[in-house]
Amino acid sequence: MAVNGIGGGLSAYTQYQSMASSAKKASEDTAKTAEKSGDTGVSVEFSSEAMEAAAAAKEAETTEEPAKERTQGERDALIKSLNQQLDAHVQQMQNLVNQLLGGKTEGLAKTLADTYRQLAEAADPETIEQAKKDIAEDGEWGVEKTSERMFEMAKALSGDDPSKADEMIEAVKKGLKQATEAWGEDLPEISQKTVDATIKKLEEWRDGLSANKSNDQAANNVQANLTAQAQTAAIAGYY
Image (cartoon, rainbow, N blue to C red; front, side, top):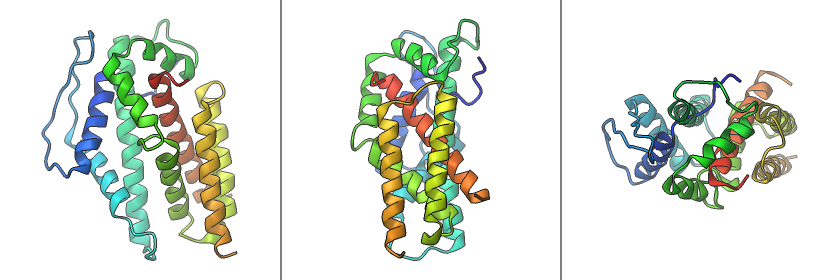
């Protein structure tokens, strides 16, 4: 099985979450850091670009003003920040596979679901505990925050036009289908709850007023978010 797009080392995963927490406290200019994971004896160094991407995504989440009409430039900046956050997660998950498998693909499970269940068995207690926090109700990959990111991406891609809400709802459903196919089996229950929450947000947005390229982009974003969430749930042992 190809591991392209699968994410990073256990130590990398732990460090990424620490980085996200420090971003909330406005820690500036954190240098390249490395952290050893469990008994693997490996360390992972983070690029300044990855750290800046995570900080930018955090800032976008905390400073956005929904009541204010966004310009196209602001929408583009939000889309960029949300994509950077996903890219950072993908980088960490890729390191996870590389570190634990030593770059070898022999003997790897045939599906992403099986792969991450196997990787979860090798996770140290600290990493598992962090994953549980991330997938909790108020966690970064919990239902609320993940659905909010997907909702905001869909809105931005629609040009903040509520009349296109139904198109975005179809994009969310399409993204769920894509994510399920990529995962290799049904996604964990939390993913379906996240999709339901996202659709509800879009319906409420649409009802407040009354398949194109943006539709495809929204679907791809939903797929990426659900896969990232499923990976975290697998490591947390919730799947």
